[in-house]
Length: 459
Ligand SMILES: *Cc1c(COP(=O)(O)O)cnc(C)c1O
Image (cartoon, rainbow, N blue to C red; front, side):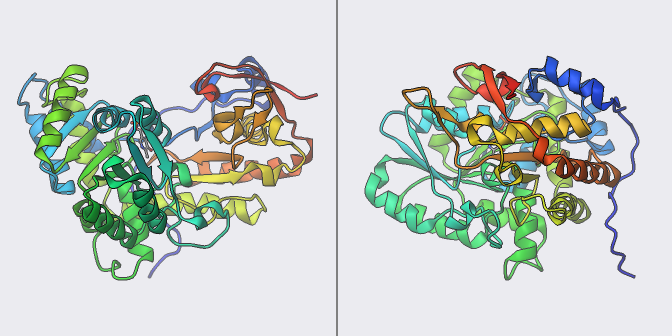
């Protein structure tokens, strides 16, 4: 019998209580947090969908492995296990441990970047772009056109536009292009997957022009699931084999282990080229730590080594992708406009579509984020003009291209009844949508304002 219900493929051994709250309590908490959920305390939140980064639940095997952590300064057993796990997956010979993804990015892009250099990506994640621009180089995003269309039913909306890549190489000159970075899945582009075909084409173009091809592989297991389901010729392969094939096309990779390595902290950089690895090793020792631990404790490396295997288990991946899709499809049925098809780690809501009465300079995304918290205790993040808006010379808002709200799902943390609760909260969101109010910014810092800005409701 093939049952329809997909259950969580784990039992719960240790629980963390959720503090419940009433709507009137949350109204007060929200006011005290200046209508910015980043300023809430986690105890004031019922369901935390702020990010899937570093919020995974570890397995009993990961916790057991942590007890085997070898904290020796050099040549620890934990390093050997970590190095072997990363090598077995990526096939890359030179591996540097780092305390999280952005540290790997700073080392690699800091070394490759500088004035006059260009990086090209399907979409640079915000820390990726920040590290590149900080080095003096510039970052170009060239996602495929379908990526801009919320409801275009394309199986691989995370793909990079290879025609435009060739065009840019001619225009900028291959010597000035420091690297092509393929982000799988494409986090800033809605968590949408990238096809193997696309990776193959990029690899061939990069080889022909002697350009370094880097995989930003934070969510490569989730990406492999989509390839397995949607791309011809991959249904018989294992998820791990699919990932290994994709790694074989690249020259280097950076990973935030806080995503698909199922841990709370960690990352790595892996490379094929010895000279590049030597240069990066120098930088690693200066800022992260000695080569056999980077910024990590031995126990962290143990947990990553186990997580990199667990994340490819078929039952886990099926449950993971299904539970994200389940949430997306349920709220779409109710008429909430979302990016469709649903990506791997999050559901993205088109807040401008949901709240057409709120103008972009009153931040419809932030309005929805506040409503979700007030009504249901759900915390999530605006990805729109609060995060990416700029001002012109007259202080007028130049809005972001989209006003999105992201519900990012932590791995192995919430059960189906948690998700069903969130779905029910949307009934109320829809019922009172006309009364949702816009916001204005009272106080904001110069950079990355979404983290700390203060808002007030527009009367
Ligand atoms: C999270 C993330 C990073 C940065 O990793 P941190 O561990 O948060 O420093 C880089 N790229 C992508 C695609 C990410 O999702």
